Length: 179
Image (cartoon, rainbow, N blue to C red; front, side, top):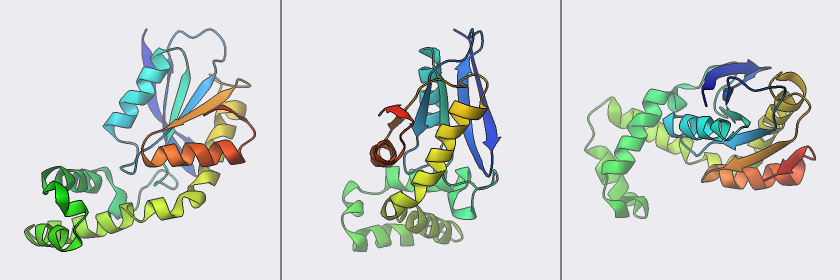
């Protein structure tokens, strides 16, 4: 089934939207809630796979405002942190001294960029309630503005940090049909 995937804006928010190209009438939708890394290649792929199952799927970019991410959350910077996370010794995440020693091995300006992005990314789980209003805006967009899902039920699914957000959203948003 051919899938249309594209970035969309709704209000001050943006997200990756995917849906079956030849859908007849509005379809139910699924809100795909990002991991800590944001809406990157893996989340875009999951969004397209959900669309291939016959849904409209939207992955809101919780780090962007008016379509722009802060410097610490740009795709390039997130990729730097992911590379660091994948190459540092596994126990570096539980041992701050070892993690700092591994960071100190990086050349500048990469070291400063990775440190800043790490700090900002990993402070995000402590702010989960602040991320629920943008998710509620995404639900309203799917149900009331997006022609391919207009008036249909909306569910949500989250991955890693997004799992906690899916639970919070289900508790706060009466329009969510499933989580």
